[in-house]
Amino acid sequence: MVDRSNEQWLADLKSDGPAKENALADLRATILKGLPYALSNYLSPDNPQFNSLTEEVAQDTLLRVMDHLDTFEGRSRFTTWVQKIAVRIALTELRRRRWRDFSLDSLVEENEDGISFPSLMIDPGPDPDALTQQSDMLQRVARLIDEELTEKQRTAMVATAIEGVPLEEVARRMNMKRNALYKLLHDARLRLKKRLANENLTTEDIWAVFDRG
Amino acid sequence: MKLREAINRLVERMRPNKEESEMQLPAEFKKLIGMIEKTQEIELSCDEVYNLLDQYTEIVDRGENAHKLMPLVEHHIDICPDCREEFEALLRILQASPA
Image 1 (cartoon, rainbow over the protein chains, first blue to last red):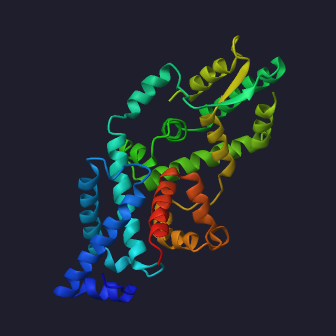
Image 2: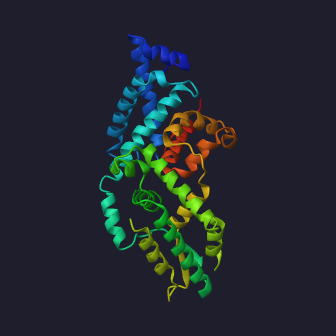
């Protein structure tokens, strides 16, 4: 593989003929070399889906790179910029597959009976006063969330923060872009933070109650 | 979304079990409070972080002070699980194939 500077990559990819073909082949090899590391937490190379996924990702990445060459600003190595695009495409596809059967409707239905909290923190048994304080604090926080957030904000917050659904997948189901969902959640967090301040309740106060035991 | 009902349920689950005198506080609630605690008035969006992610990841890979150089990106990655996953995946690639 030819060792290229950023400028050489751009020049080759914008050229015609063998230089471009060689650059595309090298870029494809670079993407395929990196993907096993990127996906190591999610998909083993032994998985039957691995090769088809990485081939698909490499192809989609090359198309996107060629469409967006002019947006590369040279703030990183060109190959890092390309790998970033490959990572986004690969993880978006993996999230889509993993959460294929999830629906926000099912979350609402499940929530009628209360959301399940699968992973638990274990604290030493508190005394009765501490337990009462903890119950009161949870009720208070619940009330603030109820009063302060819109239905959409509550749904998004429960899905992402409590259920652990990726923003990308929640956004898809809400017909929003991930960027817009982040802004909606940021607004929700900001509202809650300000409301806590208005009630003279700090997060330290909340932690303090639960640290008792 | 009846979050309050969920927390009511949580309160019930906190009652000390007769067999195990332990109080249980779900990690999810802790995470929620932690996220509120970290919230800043000005935060970068996912798109803004994506535009800077290659530069940021190289800074981290080189062992430079990302906290000082790009604090808003670092903060977003701390809050946003999707962007954090993408950062970690890209960092694994860079660490596996040094420049």
